[in-house]
Amino acid sequence: MYLFVEYGKRFNFRDLNETVLMHQDIGFGPQYINYERQIEYSTLAKEAIRDTLSDEAISEEMRILYVALTRAKEKLIMVGTQKEVEKQIQIKQELLELIPIGENKLAHQIVGRYKTYIDWLELVYLKSKQEKQEVLELFCHQTKDVLQEKNEELKRNDKCEFKPSKELKKKIQEKLNWQYQNQNLTTIPSKSSVTAIKNLEKQETLSIKECELKVPLFLTYDDKLTGAKKGTIMHMFLQKLDLRKNYTENDLKELIDELEVKHFLSRQELQTISISKVQKFLTSDLAKDIKKAKIIYQEKPFYIYLTAGEIYGGEEKEKVVVQGIIDLYYRNSDGKLILVDYKTDFVENMDEKILIQKYKKQIEIYEKAIEYATGEKVEKSYIYSLYLNKAIDICEN
Image (cartoon, rainbow, N blue to C red; front, top):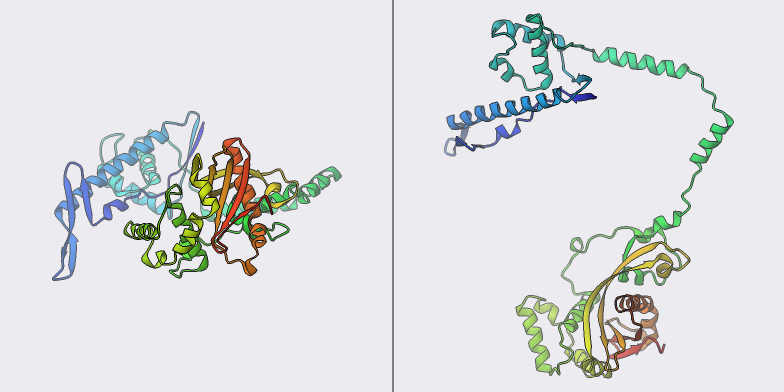
């Protein structure tokens, strides 16, 4: 086993420079600050704790070094960098002579002065030479010598003549000209939302631009009530309704006040809710059918695997995770599954076919999600347009 360790890195004593030092046994030592004179300096308590923490840190580094030195089985190669090596070794030699101590020992004052493994190893090397019991060899290499040797090696390699065979040239050419056979799949996101897919409806092909990351909503937020935000508010209000209950106009106003008190929405946002449109929905034939439903599911999130071909067209079988939220689906009195999707869009010329064309793919994905979850076919799918005050049967259009 060969073990290589970087021994020239300085120990980390940054924690000893904090304004307040703490020790589990001694306590804490703060920095003294005189605000009137605008001066600060260390306290005796802080210096005492700093010395103790320093000794403990050095002891821990010694333990780590011991573990590193005792793990090699065949040979231990210790590598480290140091500036002015000869000068540093001369200083250490003089210190060892100045503060002599017993055989095979190093003075605490000397060891504590140095903060790298390579310094400690040099002390051991010099001490072992003094005791005539050398335990390691020290090799010092100058940077210029290492660079010169490397340059000479590069020059020798440059002179080597290498003539590749035709077979090797062919293999290299094949590697250079290689192309990923499913290159088109790299432009398809592995996860998408129903909304994102809906936005691709008018595009014939998928390009890499469609997969670019968008700026998060919280970075683009503003308090202007756009048409899209008003639509979201209307959706949220419809989700708060108990569709089996008969609401009066006052009931709806009380619900709006309750949402304000509970901070679901602000007063400014709640004022955009059209009570008249909500009432028209609640009195529609669709709402009457929902009231008689055996079970109603509102605001149901889902994840479903679809092939890229199902989403973007084509024959691609690559799986894409699609996530979304279904506004409402229910099991009617006959036990059939019915899907309902609320829309608040402005409809030009009151043409309901515009909504069908725009949201057909989205409705299809909702149907697949319900069928996958229940194992049953969706009997009917409706778009309820709050702008048109009308339920549009997708199957009939």
